[in-house]
Image (cartoon, rainbow, N blue to C red):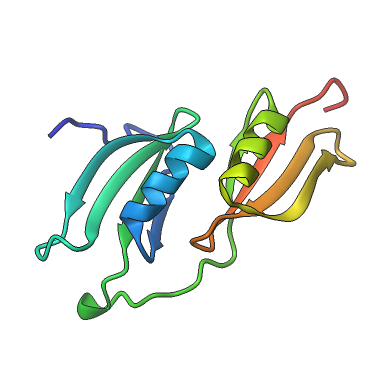
Length: 133
């Protein structure tokens, strides 16, 4: 198995209901690149996976209530993607099935910024610098 482990920084680790489906969705919505997956013993869930979005790693797994990790709704965070063309990223995410929670528009601090929620309950922020940023 290839070594795609991050060498520094901070890597978000998402637990979702249906990690395989989430990976496939993130490929469409955010241009994710699948790096590795490790199936659980029963082969029905993913115990670990890595995707890269916009050049940065994200780890994922399914919930494992049988090991003390029951399903919980994502809360208190978002995954921020800072890009050169926010509108293109936005259109792709919304076209794939993300729900708009904060419209993409120029903000008081100068950036173009908005938020969407994916079908797995994770909030994604999309931002872009402008000449006013």
